[in-house]
Length: 419
Ligand code: HEM
Image 1 (cartoon, rainbow, N blue to C red):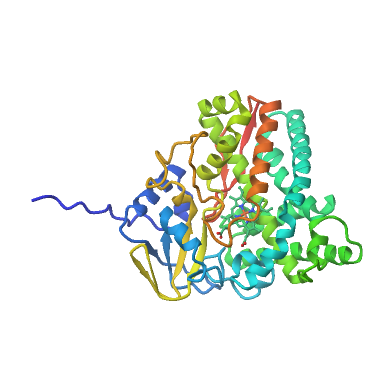
Image 2: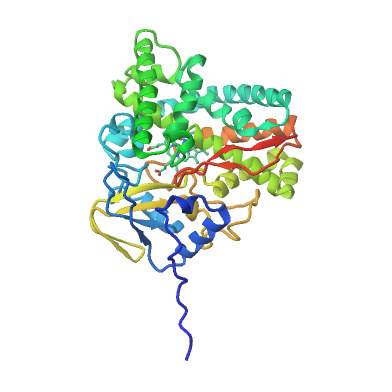
């Protein structure tokens, strides 16, 4: 008799258990490979979070094809009530965290139209000079400092200063933006959130309200005295007569402070770690920086997948890739797994700075929520590595990265470097 091949049991994989996310990266990726090999998306239950209702559980979408198709069908796979948390957000959170990433059309289209003013080719061209200037300054200071924590002294600094300058936030507030954005994206990390869920929820709300409050003060100033920053463009109506309310501006800034800050920081830190672990890839890139820059940056984003997932909620009964979803089901789109899907990427765990094509989903799948800052992020990562290559070509990490405890962000809190 021919033996029946059964998929390996999955009892040891619980994506809802934070312990899973503390395992080494190779173990997590091996688990995702087993989930991808299942005939249907695997269902996970939600843990009891005390004050937050625990919710009905969710399907893990781990294959590239599923993530792409769900992303391009927002009528069925909706971003409301929340794309960024698996449990529905507790009451009171919508005020600061109810940004465009968590809403669908027509509200999403209106918000995206308005905030896109900040991402026009003209705005981006102006920002690019800023990115260059700041990267030069940061790498020059890093050289002065000598061996140190790469995250604090380099990776975290560039995205923060770029977002703050873009919005017109005075330098004296940059530290507060940094600290509060760390809290908002702290995942399950006790260093930022304290030891229990009530403390964590309190800290999250305070961080959101401080960021929104800062923008509300700035908005009042820019309404009276507009400048050429993005805040001025967002709060003053343009020819279409559209502008953001104070509440919309506040939650947009909370989104920018985290979406544009932590993500890019982690991509840069992972980039240095990957180049250290794969010196032959570094030698290749350094041998002709410009020739390899575009593909190297995409490969860093694919391999690191700084944003691990986004959630969708199914609006009506629907069949997708052979699986039947019911209205109300939650689906979690695991970009980190789609980016290692062997059906799409040859030798998916290999870090290959020349990989082409590289249809990774690190910035999201094709759809209305595709990362608004993708161009800016690519630019920041490129410029940072160009400066490192130019001034500190021997830079490398000298110890294990200290990882953020989170299932949502593939974060590095600290990582020693030398050159
Ligand atoms: C390597 C860096 C980055 C990564 C990996 C990343 C990843 C993502 C992902 C996965 C999404 C969700 C896509 C979806 O739901 O389909 C997203 C949305 C978004 N990102 Fe990024 N991002 C990065 C950098 C940035 C930067 C620099 C900015 C802004 C300055 C930014 C602003 C946004 C915004 C505003 C959204 C929401 C778009 C919407 O809902 O329409 N991101 N990003």
